[in-house]
Length: 310
Image (cartoon, rainbow, N blue to C red):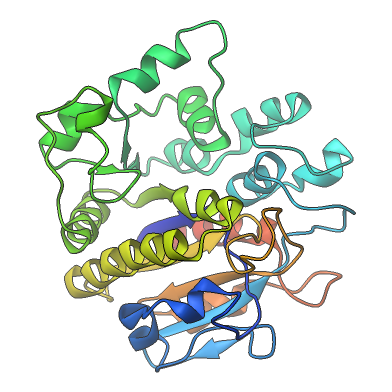
């Protein structure tokens, strides 16, 4: 079994209100098609269709305050309750005391130790690497996990060769970043690329941060545009994926985009979308916590179990 994980920064389950929730304002045909025409809301949090299962995940993890990326992504990509260990939600970068946990427990390392092939599909421009080498360079949970696990970060050359995907999905921003040789691709093509990578590796992760950025901006039109890019990529994934071989796992670290009336994060549950052979069984692996629903810490152990025991 191969797993393609699409991580969305800052997407929760919100009200069924197109005036405040961009998920209900954007068309989202690919996502709706997977879910039998429905989308998740606070009043309809769990959705099932023959092709996909969507369940809510607790992003609060028993800690007061608004969830943040550093601690939430630690929980998501290690299976360890980062906010509880830190004593608070913290971000966007990982809390210092969590770095040893990220080093030892991240999903890349744990799969690599089990002789599984892994890939972080995001390609980065040279300016990113220049920033990291500067005095203020800091890594996010995903890039830190790769760096500490010996997983190479992809460069412009990889993107140009079709071996990676841009963080903005299409690559439209690369010429302005000093890479005029990178020409934009359609979101559908980005999805196809991810599927090709998923067939080459047992685990592939793609991170999409523009959802969180749009939520902080409180701009409905930007949020709709960001979601349309995502949905176009999802259409490419669906069209190119053999569901007997690849499981799609799409989720987030905290809420934000689903309530455009505030630039802050939310305490809403986040959606976990599963598609592929056995998606219903995978959802059943995730045991509810004290909140009554599974939380972010359940994902990494379940993915490792799926890949290693398939």
